[in-house]
Image 1 (cartoon, rainbow, N blue to C red):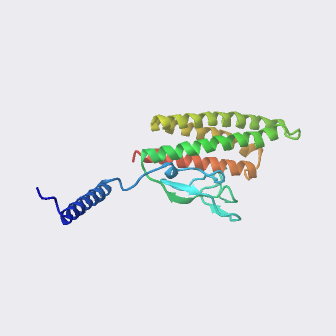
Image 2 (cartoon, rainbow, N blue to C red):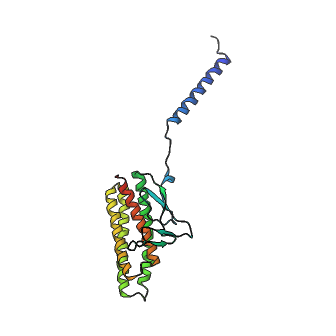
Image 3 (tube, helix red, strand yellow):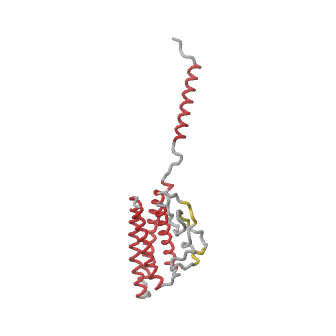
Length: 223
């Protein structure tokens, strides 16, 4: 039997190589166009103050050294005021309107809110409660605020669990409860302190932004 020639081996090898290349390219073309990783997750940076912008958006903090006029008020009886760094509204950034993206945003916002609320209780409320110059009327208000902010932290924890369980109806209820707690403190603070008290105004504007934005995103999924 005559042995195959060199040209025959060359043609067979070339055919096999071209077939493998074609099949490989075809498999790539059929693969997913986008691969999501943990880096695609929505996060709230440590230095980013959250405040309300609009439905379907998250926010970036304002530029340093800038001020802005807040048309929706400063959280105290809806009175418009010039707000400083840390209390001005978001610069809007689009957010995907689907359940995983909203869950991720809400969880991140609640975790950050718990940290900020705990710091506010320790650094502002307890400090003023321990100040010998604080009168009894203000102490009663500060104690009320401490209680309701601790309740709001429990609501934040429940909201994280709600979103992890996929129960957005319950998350809506718990975020609303958190908002009610904040309003209770604002009511007494408006009476015993100036509505322009910088520490309270900064915190309440921030926390109002979180609750409003999270509620908008949660309820927006049903629209």
